[in-house]
Length: 262
Image: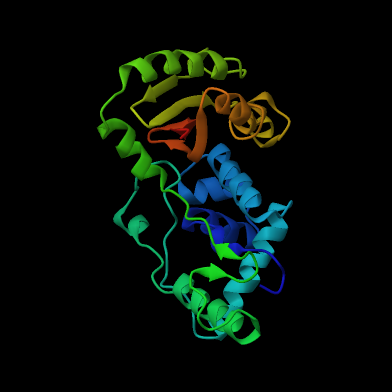
């Protein structure tokens, strides 16, 4: 894209939060609009910044809004989409609608443009992007992993000691597994799920303060050294999800998935 930012990596929940932000909302007012928590909204924004490499949520929101406006001008507008469910469950049936055409149209335009300017011979595989020389990685849906870890046959000799080792390491992160914060570790034969909840601060200022212990804990679940330490246990990060809990607006819930290294 002209601005060098790959907005196609954003999922629909992240896009909806950013578009509300572009309209002048704050994290708190976005949470009120979506029936979620400011903590869950901030996690969506943090994940969106990580995916795109844009350091400012406001700037990322502006870029996304600009792209949406261009699509509208080209007749590529998506079907109207209601607010995504950041709380883990739909508040109404309208929240289960999905974008059907917007990203398809964007993909067609991007591929059409690359065909005009690329030096790749016509015989090159269509799934290889000429800028990186290979196919783009396919991201795993956390809901698929949630099902898989519960359905695959358990390798007890591998899973039992590993669950204990994971719990010991993750418990070193402040707030986790104490004072009403849940911590759950589940391994099957090829996959492990690390999940739990973190009570959000009562103070709105502390919830929105990126240097508060609450937000530092959420960050520590996503960035080194945790992934590196779990790598030493023979695990590879696959996917993750941060959301809210239905009926518990004061909680932020996390689910992280690590696969057994080959």
